[in-house]
Amino acid sequence: MTPHYLDSLGVHEGRGQVHTGFLLQDTFAMMPFISSLEPMRAANRYSEKHLYSWQLFSETGQPVIGSNGLPMSVDDAFSDQWKLDRLIVCGAHDPKTLCAPDTLRALRRFSGRGVRIGALDTGCYMLARANLIGSRRCTVHWENMPGFRQEFPQLKVSSELFEIDGNLFTCSGGHAALDMMLTMVSEDHGHELASKAAELFIHSTIRNSNESQRMSVVERDGIFHPKLVSAIELMEANIDNPLRSEELANIVNLSKRQLERLFRSHLDATPTMHYQQIRLRAGHNLLLQTSLSVLEVADACGFSSADHFSKRFRAFFGQSPTDLRQQHFGQRKR
Image (cartoon, rainbow, N blue to C red; front, side):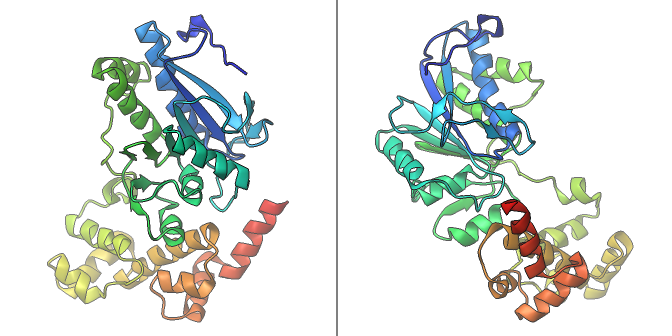
C-alpha cells in the first residue's frame, strides 16, 4: 500500500526522498512515535517539497494499541519486501514482549541491504535480539536501562538522550525522539530547516544527544545542597556495590556525622535508609524487566542474600518480590 498525505498539512502526495517505515508493537509509546514523525511532516511543509514519506507496519498488519490505549491503524504487515530508506522500531511497553522470528529475520535483511535502522524507547530490545547493534553505541529509556544492561551485558549502552552511530540510531523515548529526528533533519537538509520545524512545535532548543535523560536531583527532589546532591548521585551510580557511609562522606568532603545530619534535615532519613530505598527501587525494575532470579536481582542491587532483599522489599513495597512478579505477569496474561 502506498501512503498518501494531504497538501493542506504540508505533506505532498507520493514518495518522499527518504522513505521511513515504522514498525509498531502493541502497547508502543505514542509520544516518541509522534515526536519522530512530526519533524518529517514539518520539514515537508517548510521546504514545500516531499523530502520525507512514511508507512506504518505491525507484525500482522492488524491495528495496534498504544500504551495510552489508543488504537492505531497501519498500512500493512511488516516484511522485508518493502523498499525503505529508514526503519524505526517502536517497542512494546513491557520490554520482555517478544516478536516473531520472521520479524527478526526481516530486520536483519533490511540491515543487510544498508537500510538505516533505529529504535524508540524499548524498541532497542528488538534490535538487540536481532543482533543488529554489535559494537555500536545505543541507548534506552533510563527506567529500562538496568534491565537492558543485565540482558545484553556485551553491548555499549549509554545514558544519552539518543545515539546516532553509523546506520544505527536509538532513542531513550519521550520528547528525546523530537530532538533526535530534528538532528537527523539537520543532517539531511541543514540547520535552518530543522530550526523552523523545531519552532513549529514550540521547541526553542534542539537538545544535544549528551544531555541527561533524567531531571537532576535538584529538579527531581527539590534538593539544593550541593554536597547532598553529590552524595545521592553517587548512590544512584553505585547500586550493585554500595558505598559505605564513610566512603560517601569522604568523597564529598564531609565527616560521616555531617553527612548524616544533611540527610536527616533534608530527607528525614539516614544515608543508609535512603541508599537502601534507591537500591530497592532498582530491584523493583529488574524484577519486572528481566527474567533474573530473586537471588540474581538481590546481588545486582547490592544485597547480601535473597532473604535479606525479600524482607526489605516486602517492608518497603508491601509485597514480596515473587508476589510482585505473579501479580504483574498475571495481569499481563489477562
